[in-house]
Length: 426
Figure 1 (tube, helix red, strand yellow):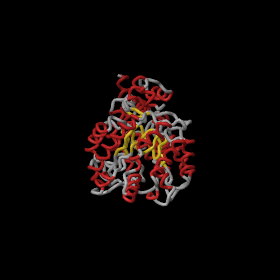
Figure 2 (cartoon, one colour):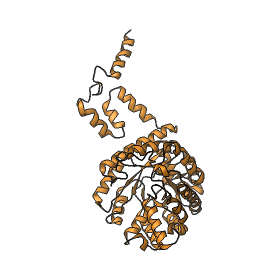
Figure 3 (tube, helix red, strand yellow):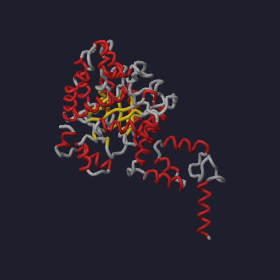
Figure 4 (tube, helix red, strand yellow):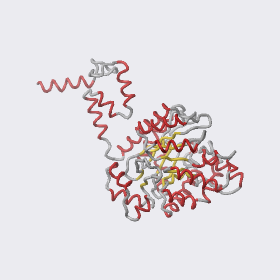
């Protein structure tokens, strides 16, 4: 039984009960929308230390943090340090995108040490075992997927919308195909002159996912890699295909979310969200960024967070963070921290705009700032260490009723408090 099949049967799982309490929403509402495919709870039965997280309709916006080794850097200790950082700063999901080192060992360690849902892109593991992607046989993809499911992976990116016809559309682009999985599949199809094995074997993948209750993250292998390519024919053709596969997966009792762009200018974000909702039957939408301009190299956590806030405001359920290293290199620990914080801000800002009951912490922090309660101000901040560092940088006295921006004489809060105090005296 999967979370979806249980919900359709009218049954309540312990994971549903947990999410209902965390989100402060009625259990019946949650179960009904899981049954409709509008909410998912990715939780593999072999990920035993997991704290379930819900994604979708009327739930708080969640963020995902990508970690993982590369062929140039494959230190398992470094990846576990990133996991710890993800948990410390509040990432709701973690994806292991490792491509270097012993992938099975790295993946196993991450799952064992991570209490939030873990995602992967299984084609990376399959390609790692051969000299080149062209050497893979169709059944190799299935073997890798089941192996990772047995390890406890909660959701997997499956690029089953990358087809021979959609690849032809992508050849017209400025930036081509920027998805690693999408480009690898394009090479495989060109060499073998056959259709994408993730598409031709989609029913078999569904059977594996239902067996372990792994959730689909139907991958945007043709996401736009620059704003010029946004909302083009290739992207929309793939999205339509993912909508068709969503229904197939649902029929097999599999949970589904849809991956989305990518690079999208601000004025096209709402349109992208509405298209996904229409074509993919309101399955939860999971976007990378989106980055709203291409010139932010070194600052793409900012360009992505801007797009992420707008996307989530219009209905996106899960934001994949972008770090300052995007397009440039493998993120280090500080990049991971900055990416998480930027996208936590974006998600929270969107939830306020959506009218969710989340503004209490903002009001509480503002009251602490007004009262010069620095410690409470730090504690309620998304990054208490950074807030404390800046506050104490120029004026070490934490109990002083002003900061180094204005000093005592020009402090607006201090001066207006005196105005109110004088009113009381009069």
